[in-house]
Length: 140
Image 1 (cartoon, helix red, strand yellow):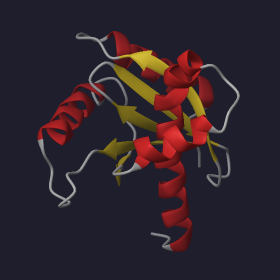
Image 2 (cartoon, helix red, strand yellow):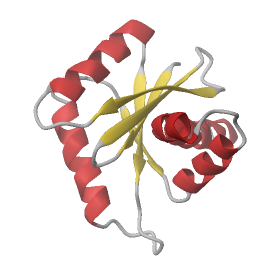
Image 3 (cartoon, helix red, strand yellow):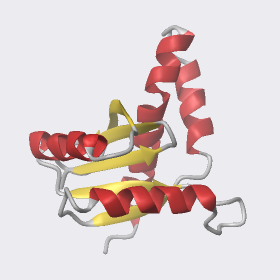
Image 4 (cartoon, one colour):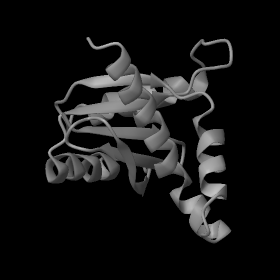
């Protein structure tokens, strides 16, 4: 099963995709989050292009594990997205993924500007890989 992960931020959305077996995640792209249907249509096009069967969305929980303002923003975005994509949606705790993505990107030889551009996609890959690992360890 092929999954597409979203790391939804206020300005950008990082996307990552799994391989066809659902074992490995890789960064895919970063798109702008703008009002209106533009980003919804971009994601729908990627879903069709890559044969995606389910979405994994990073849920930014507070350190306490509760949902705050940012989690509400992500849920609102996904509520709009489901008008364009009829796929199962899985929520994945994304605490610490930005820090992990920063550490991964620090090891690359890319310029700081290129690292910042890809950081959201790498964070989405971290979210997706955590989901895939949990799924493998605890199948539904």
